[in-house]
Image 1 (tube, rainbow, N blue to C red):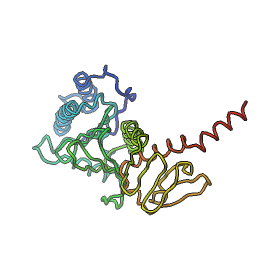
Image 2: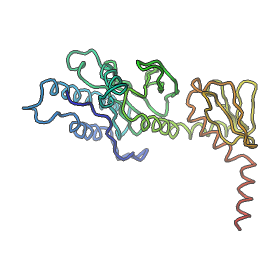
Image 3: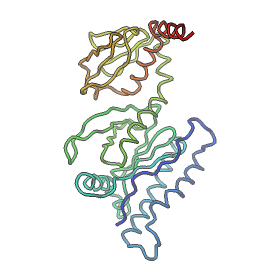
Image 4: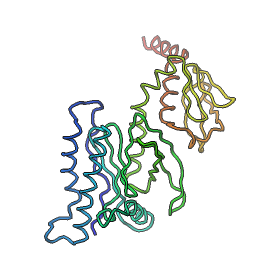
Length: 288
């Protein structure tokens, strides 16, 4: 059997560029991905390899069609199961390949894949294709049970409202696609999130909330002039204060939806608070 592909990455797209039309993108993607799945000369390749390659091509066509319907834009990265090897990586590769059981021989041989697009992602697994849009999804970071014990995972909500779990061992290079998903969700949702506090609204992120005046959780509250940044410390939500100290609140970080957006909001709140503007003016005076 040929080793499944790990990742294929091209230069990230410019968001909102109308030149990246979906139909053309799907055609381009289908051609470029075929080169990574063809097992060489069909006349000499192992029959199992040819069957797997054919299943991969059929799956790619379905993925491209689903992404086109959701208007995800251009695909710029693809991640497959980790390369087979001893220990954990080998077991993870087997687990990922099993995600697409069912659907006949082709479905049983097609390999699980994660595809990143301009405006969302697709996950092919368990005989299905899930579509996620960055501007509407909810993402949580959790630890889930796997064959190797506890594993880090991302739990997202797809366009149908269904939760999907992306374990870091299911696809290669999780240290790349994990932060990229968080960045893309933040970029897509932050403009709308910034507008709400500016209009006097309260944004709720599970047990934590934020307004234009500050950040709070249950009985705790810190005004914007006291907030420097928010982070996850030992699994809990923590706020760094103007005094340089950390206030660790009881909110468990894994229960906070879109923590990445909340962090960006808190950074904006800290940067626009009166104390920060005064500090900036003082720095300018010192330089002059």
